[in-house]
Amino acid sequence: MEQLLLDNGPVPTFIQPEATHSATTRGAAWLGAAHFVVDAVCVSAVLRASPQSNSLISSAFALVLGYDLLAFAGQVPFGWLIDRLGLRRGAALAGLVLSTAALSAASDAGTSVVLLAGLGNALFHVGAGAMVLAGSKGRATPAGIFVAPGALGLGLGLALGRRPAAVPLWPWYVALAGAFVVVLLVSLPKNEPAEDKAAFQLDRGRGEVVVVLFLLWLSVAVRSLVGTVGCDGCPRGVLLLAAVPAAGFAGKLAGGFLADRFGWINLAMVALLASAPLLAFSGGDLYLALPGLVIFQMTMPVTLAATFRLMPDRPGFGFGVLCLALVAGTLPAYFPGGWRPQGVSVLLLVLASAAALYLALRRVLPSAATQATPFSPQASTSPPLTL
Picture 1 (spheres, one colour):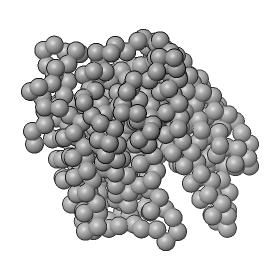
Picture 2 (picture 1 turned 90 degrees about the vertical axis):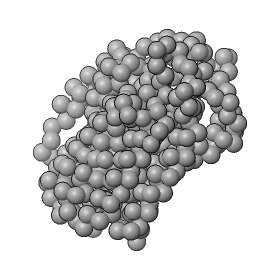
Picture 3 (picture 1 turned 90 degrees about the horizontal axis):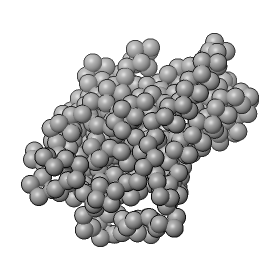
Picture 4 (picture 1 turned 45 degrees about the horizontal axis):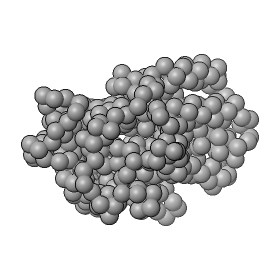
């Protein structure tokens, strides 16, 4: 990883094109809608291609796991290439094409569907995510607007993928075509001024960048594990299937706005510390666990925006690293005989996530009193550090 970061230096001009693509906050909202479509289509396609018989449950698990690894872990190498070649919009469009191909594949073509859906999902996420981060001016709000709809798309894809015969495909083709148009219209081809990036590029050594990035990665991985097991004791049913994605959507969307308004460290610490007892000791009470999940998810936009501030020349790679943390965090819970912590273990994990995020943000965010920014001559873009 140290070799990839290269001391956060600029991408060589002989590789990086003159203009790269970014998106405004309004563009992030449209890309968020496309994000919803891609996640719903890919998950639904993989479940349609999975064996339906209970006797083949291990095969279905292998397909879903393979998809998750491609869709999330694949974002790291794709993100690195996209940053090197300046192909943010091209990657997002290629992801939509591959997602459409996955939807069109035969329902018994399991391996092909997993490859198409996994690669398509990874390319779209890292391409569109890089555009959003590059146009965010270091704020957390655009990241929250973009990532939040994915939770709803995942929930809808899970619901529809389990009833393949009852769901027509043509509405998804229309939605994918609309997403293709959205990516073309909202991506802004423009140079990113050096002074914009200089607002975030502090004098950090390569080792410090690696350490801070690992702390952010660790915080997200722990959050992913806790979010996976947070409703283990809750009664299963339609309410739970609908409420968990809605909680993820609400938390991520609100988190970006609140972090920029009240300060990243303030929001992150309050959210994690307030959610810890709710998730650890809900005892299967859905009305305690769900508020805990909403508050818990508020830190995702902060970690994404912090990664961009840490590596402003590598928004795609930074986005991919945190998505790798998402899938890595779920693995201990999903493998047979895996670890699904409860009670005090969850409380300690959330506290560890809070500590890692606090240490990372203290290094990412300079003092508000000393920060000067080209984006707003009247106010710093750096959130206040006070608790």
